Amino acid sequence: MSRLPRAAIWCVLIMLMHIALAGGRVAVMLNAVELGISKFGVGLLIACFALLPMFVAVPAGRRIDSHGSYHAMWLAAFISASGTLLPWLWPNWFTLAFAAVSIGIGHMGFQIAVQGLLGQTDTATRLRNYSWLAMAMAVSGFSGPLIAGLSIDYIGHRWAFLMLGLCPAVALFSVLRQRVTLLESHKPQPLAEQTTRMVDLWHIKPLRYALISNLLLASAWDTHYFVVPLYGVQQGFSATTIGVILAIFSVATFVIRLLLPLIQGRVKPWTMIHFAMISASVYFLIYPWFSQVWVLMGLSFMLGLSLGSTQPSILSLLQQHAPAGRKGEVFGMRMALVNGSQVSMPLTFGALGTILGVMPLFWLSSVALAGGAWLTRHSGQHDQTTTVSETND
Image (tube, rainbow, N blue to C red):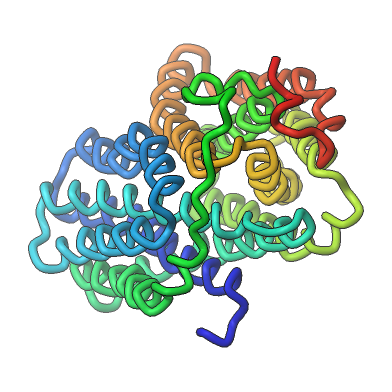
């Protein structure tokens, strides 16, 4: 692995950590069902993956700014590996909850550290690095559940955690081998005088707009995975059909991320973000008007292309506009918002769906995305041109 470019190494390591997260959600859920835990209990277990990271992401980012990536990465990998392996040794409700919290915390800390490392370069290389990161996340998002499912079917629920736990364990070993490189990569920077509190970061307009756009796009991603199964059940689709529609979305995200290195040299970040929000808004608007499976598959693919195209652009904008010495904190804010969406969105949409039905949920997402595109419509003028000192309101 040492012969790979450093950016590629970091992407491989975050892929291993994300396999534990993506597969861990499946393993925890199915193991809980096997143990006879109630549906409410299963819901609480899944919420554990995002609930604590939502609160500690920003402090974790500050620690990374102060002390560098090495300590955060080995500690995050150790926490994730330990938590994942515990249900293999002793499967019950407590160890599943501990695994969920540990995997969520570990992935959060590791991802914030890696995002900072990949951004320590020029703009063009930064976009390329974040494209590699997006590709790695797409691969792990597919392979994690597959590893968990195959392990459960062929060697049992407990052993699935052993297979998943090997991934962060390998990441831990690799981080320890890269100790010197990681320690040398940390270059302490003084805090910008005009931004000493977290709320001050929100006052930097391009930074605020990038965070809002990321929240809306991440929420749209979660909405698709939450609402489409409900809509499919309402239409009388089989579980296999619903699964295929969701799988096609994942395939589209992989395809667009494979093409991103060719696209990013020709399209500015905010142009890509606005196109994604507007096109996704249109897809959500027309989605519930169709019941033909082949049409829904096509819409799911197009939606995957839109939502899967923006992560490198948003990460690059956050890196560009974050004040000196606070880039980890900014990435922590992003993680906190994403995790907050993952916790609150299913609860909110579940309540609204009970009252209003499924169709209005698509339209609420459409309106939110269109509103976000309108709010940030002038943000393109900040692409690679505006310094932090010039962007305070």
